[in-house]
Amino acid sequence: MQVIRKFVLLVMLAIGMAAAPAMAKEEVVKVKDRKAMTGATQVAVAAFNVGFIFESTDQIAKTGGMLGAFGGVTKAKSELVGVTPEMMQAIADAAYADFMDKLAAQGVATVPVSTLFADANIAKASEGNGPREAKIMLEKKSSGVATFVKPSALPGQIVLTGDLPEKDGGFMAIGKNIAAGGRQAAIASYVRETGIPVVSVVYLIDFSDQKRPGAFSFGGGVKVNANLSVVPDYSKVTVLGKKGQNDIVLQQQMSVDGDFIEQAEATGGTEKTAQAAANIGGGIAAAMGIGTPRIGKTRKYAFNAKPGNYEQGATQAATMANDVMVGQLAALR
Image (cartoon, rainbow, N blue to C red; front, top):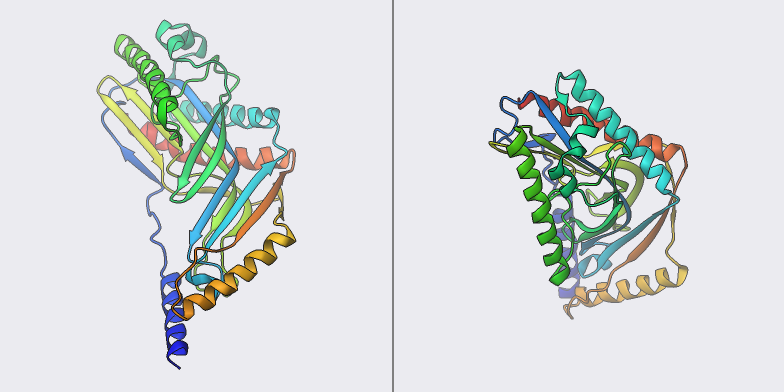
């Protein structure tokens, strides 16, 4: 009887914890205005990088069903295939053209690309043509691998310090930081000599929307819905001016649903059987007070991009982000 009471109490606690709603961010963007745009009559859009996530791993501790919920870790490993370099380039080009058009519509003049990249400082800040890959932390206990592409209209790829929060360490990270510092100094020299603020745009596009259960579920875990979205926190506009730096950071996901991707669970039958058996054993042990083994579920999902549809959806998500970012940028003048 004591064991049963303990088990019921654990279930009730799990329900209460899972049902607690997460606090959503109310503001669409977070703006740090350090007067970089004050008095500016034009800007130099020197960097515009669109990142595409192709691999991601999300995990939640203590989820996965009535028995498995007391010690397991549910993981969702997702992989996107079928996106070609040409498809990424088309999306980056369309997003950049839309951004520039919307700046013009807001009355924000821009330095011609040919003039901008003819400057020695801007040329020094360039890292080649890209693309650039980065291992990033999407959120706590979630990671991803992304490829960042520049628009064809920009002769070189420029990445400002802090634009790509890479998950690197050791000597490799030190070397990258030193190189990034030199490029940042070159950008600062351009701003100082010309008086023109430099604008850097970074958008990160995800192919799967990882949704955590809103309530206790006997089948629980990480639900993966195929859609396309511009990821908050990592997607931002940075303005470097003589008086300081402005940061416009996306706080809410710009998401588009549609027939962009084919999704299928890729977890093998043997894996599912082994995980189910381990979870049942772990749940019973937890209920009887014999400890809480860290055994959970791992689900693999395969996503296949639909040519034409994928580009359309990703571009739409990016242009939605442009609406928000350009409006805030123009308001900072």
